[in-house]
Image 1 (tube, helix red, strand yellow):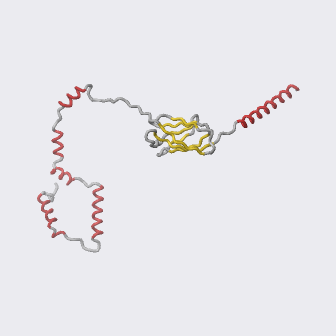
Image 2: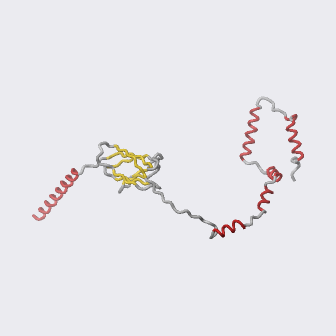
Length: 217
């Protein structure tokens, strides 16, 4: 029984000692200061902004991206390491100083371009330049395609196709709008009669000669 009391007293003493040590260690290490870190990411050659670059705190899952003007703002602690990355630029690491007297801090980060230039590669449809040159010079281009295109572009044939081609929705809408505009323009009065218009008679005789009034079988 005495052994159990002695063991119980030892456990209580150990727990008390651990609590005191934990409290002392917490007091010896004050909490880190929270800082609102704002920055501007620019290029090193022209000081142009680097939009949509990634800014994240190392060894954490917190981060942000810069806007179109290269500006960003994030909450950090003292001595945090910020890693800034962007496509076409070298990665940059920035350590937040621990000597700040205010809770706000601003900085301008310059990025160095990291461009890789590859050698020029020419791709030909033939294995060698000689074969390509020979095929380009001696290839026989058929003339039937050209003749067929010229027949399709004949003025009389195009007029015939246009006469029997139905109107598109855009053309129908334009015709309806023109008719509505005419009715509104001559509202309250009789529309003019074009029976004595020489230009209208000229169009009529021209259409008659071309056979536009023939019945379609």
